[in-house]
Length: 203
Image 1: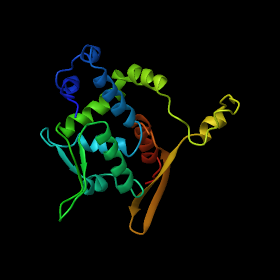
Image 2: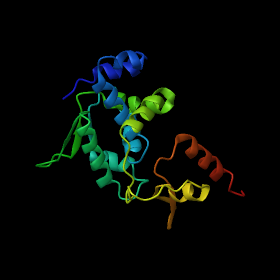
Image 3: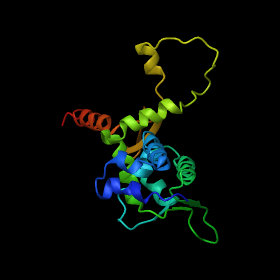
Image 4: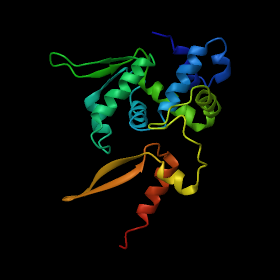
């Protein structure tokens, strides 16, 4: 497993990212992959939950993460897939529970710091790095025909291309609300939505 300890200095000491990445392309790749994963659920929810842990916590159970992300519809399988992605990124190991043990993710690093590092890239600190990585390794669009003509985006086309996920929220006994929101919902957008909902009651 790679040693990502120098990366955690970005959080612990506020070290300069470019200085840390000099001579360590593996650190740069790890940082960009982590911050890019944070753009979407359930990765964002898992990593945000990591930030709630004590500094020395290095184990997270799937049961706990599932409870934390109960606002998502059937989150367990997506959570497990993301934990396996974290393992592929070499941030830790996904372990299936056996003989009464719980299925969990175990890291040699502080989970809290991993969560903070993921969010670090969303605060304007890793934007250029993520863009550079995206240009170098473009993601394939599902169902896209490489030979098809390029159609310029229009406002309506952009609107319908947004990937959504449904969230169920028990508003009151006997009434469950379903919301369809973008999978990469930002904190600012969530705050605007919350302010809008607060404005709805008449009494």
